[in-house]
Length: 444
Figure 1 (spheres, rainbow, N blue to C red):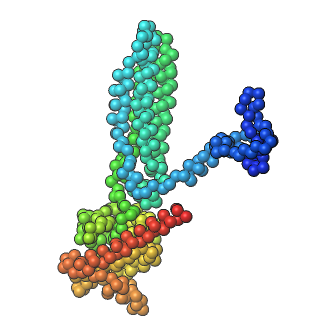
Figure 2 (cartoon, rainbow, N blue to C red):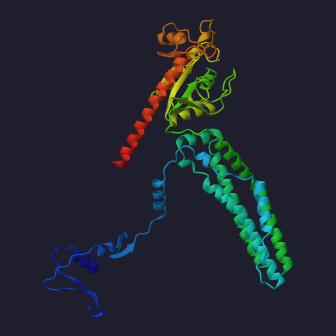
């Protein structure tokens, strides 16, 4: 330690005169009076930069532990943007994987130049079992590597997985596929080894047949996991992709208030329209074009008056969109009574959502305004308390500033389109501002 430290001090001391000897008889460091030599860049390049720890006065390279490596990998990993589902691999049905593997394995021939029949047969059997094992294990490993871990997905897509497939089902299926792969590899290696140790041609043929049969049994018994993974891939790839940098309008409200009808009017989306609750069974996407600008519109399942613990997965999908995506909200109210949810219940739902997601840009719409002139439907659960001034006003006109529209008479639709354009333009400005602030934080 003293020699290395002295050399480093000498190299960086402005008052030191030194010269490196180059001859065999003068290796090392010696001084020439009157000469002054400064350390060069070449010397600095060769300075050892490995980190060491002191252990009993000796220098030992610090080994990176497994835990430290995992922490580093986690810290360097970033959350994916939305769209990970469209990158999922194409999964083959289990029957096709097994059939293809058996067919390719049978074509494997023994190594050339083996004159002994027994040796040639056991070589052929071992190679075919090894090939069968690999033809099954490699595709399964590829699936496992290309299906993303849920913890690295965008929160919106994590919610879609949990609410669409069921909590824990995604990880369970991937775990079963991995278990299948491990079992096939274990059995394949075991029987290939046994086949390679056969003493006679007949014994080699029997062990080849036994190993092939064992692998087929395992795959036929556990191969349903591959078909379940195929179903997951199809389901997730069908999910609509939301561009986080494109302004998005999210229609929210109670079931059957007219959200889907407005989506058809405002965008290219063509959701199902029927007169019963929960017509929208998922997140439906459409697009709007205003003055050569593209925007997104999403139709969401209706919300009922109940606490989050009692909500079904369709309602939770709506809340996931509002929680994890930067959307502007078009809240739709139906005061005619045609939707099946009383104005009083709609008022309670509206106040809750407004309080939870008030930070979003917001626009209120009262649909079916042509039916308000008729005698409204009276609900037993409706609150007729005359002292509740805000509720009484809501039941007649909706929230303050709400636009009254009618698909049947086309009343208010032009005003709605103008206001929606203004809302989405404001949303675009907000997205650009937030992106600029994030870039400034990264630079600083």
